[in-house]
Image 1 (cartoon, rainbow, N blue to C red):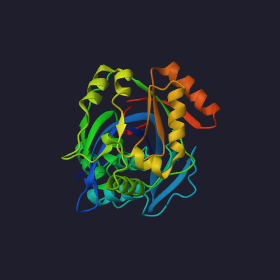
Image 2 (cartoon, helix red, strand yellow; image 1 turned 45 degrees about the horizontal axis):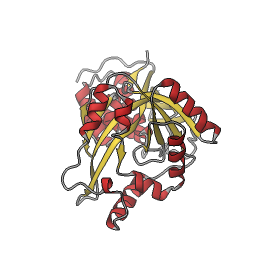
Image 3 (cartoon, rainbow, N blue to C red; image 1 turned 90 degrees about the vertical axis):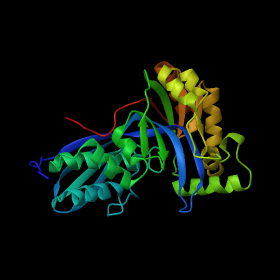
Amino acid sequence: MTIAAAQPSVHVRAPGKINLFMRVAEPGDDGYHDVATAYQAVSLYEDVVATPAAGFEVSFSGSVDVSGLPVDDSNLAIRAARLLAEETGVTEGVHLAIDKHVPIAGGMGGGSADAAAALVACDALWGTGLTKDELHGLAALLGADVPFALAGGTAIGTGRGDRLSPVLATGSFHWVLVFAEFGLSTPAVYGELDRLRGEGQVPPDSVAPAGAPAVDPAVLQALRAGDPGLLAGALHNDLAAAAIGLAPELDEVLRLGASAGALAGLVSGSGPTLAFLAEGADEAISLAVTLSSAGHTAAHVHGPVHGARVVR
């Protein structure tokens, strides 16, 4: 491979995501669950600046508490940089300065966005010139949500969520996100779903699918139409009952959002971030004010937005 001259630094921005729809199969022999999900990238971003270094280093800043984040090789962004270096024969190191705004352990894929941004940033920094398909292949090795953070937009994810099919979404959808002051472990939420299903304590529409899980066609129709009213009726998350079981206070916030004018609300991914769909920008701003006045941390975002991209 011909490697171009390195750049002094590269700034990449990658989005958080919400899951508009999520169906979860029973665990396989390896303990993992196949899913069918509809992702939408939204305007809450992680910023990663890559600069040359002797080794592989990461530092954090941002609007969320970053004090407990790992800075060793267990960090997903460091793993992404090392993977790219190993695959392309690069012998240089990198320092990744990550400015975080996506909640940690919040079900919005912040760590995956960091990893996707690290791949794009290091590819540009080192001049390795990988194609989109090659970067996607590396992203899939890092985690189920990393390929989507790389691609952005709106997409259907199947398998572990990493097999992506782009979806046409016309117009812009406006969301109000409510952030919890705590995180939820994704494995713990899946484990709770398995327990609830085993005890017959999930809603009928969250019982494990008989075959491979699939996204409701009504979701695709609503996205193509750009109709928030139609989409509100199609939102669904099998993991919601498990997340609420582990954090019952989420149900109270969902009820508050509904009473304050949201078209619909749902747990994003494995939670605990909640996403409320609004009719438009003005309604979203009003809803965010109401939820903030009630003591919650709320933010108005829109989607779909692009995936990990170099900021010029």
